Length: 328
Image (tube, rainbow, N blue to C red; front, side, top):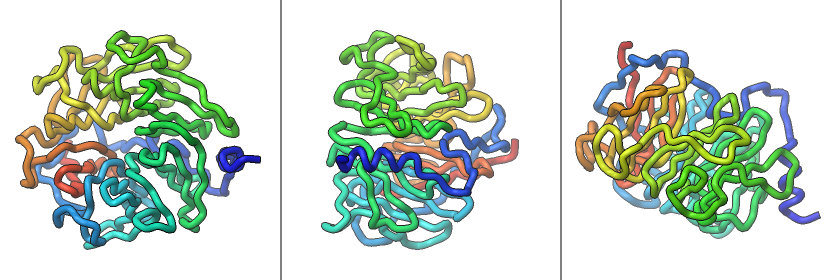
């Protein structure tokens, strides 16, 4: 049995914890269509300039949180490591990478598999997806090899979805499978609805529909389960900074009402796109790139805690910002 086969079989590993596996399916009940967020954020990780010291980050990309343990996990890409940062802490702890023993090469995304108490990491520079046990971070499994991976998602049946931004496609690995299946794109680079152009982040809903940040086409596609093409649902007018446009969109997530939230990286803002609307609104940022508390600089990843507070990987500022939920 190969290392990849052995590692893939470990996707069947379970615990007595019955937490929903797909972290993206855990929605805050506090978020409504009228929710606003305080425009001045607070720095909850990094913010001390670029560096490799434990109180610094270097181009953080993917983030995920565990509200139960009050921890933020950060793909600290420029430092080739994953950092664990406890709520309120002044510095982080390296979980994996950052040295020769547990080497990562430009990790760009990660997700928390709470049921299996592990992190799944897109180790882009090494062209692989790895699982790291949180009980014993030295124990690592190569789940997928030879893929120019970027964004990751997992559904409730433990199937894993991975953006291959080199082949312009999304592949799905069912639990226990060795080879993945193309479920979106795969028809070459392009701007037709059956094509993708550098898909970079994905979200999967309870109906197994994919929401794809099709970055170089500056729009968001919804791809129904089993469909041959996607539907353009946000960003209909090409690159730009109008409320109908994006500039290199990154992370996309969905709330319980079906509204989209997008890290509009090139416009230094987070957008909300209400379901079935043709334009979005600015949630936070949009005040030019900068280091002020109401500014972002190339935001990449976003997530919410159970209270509805918004967390942003503010990549070019080398920090993670928290924007508290306001009064609905």
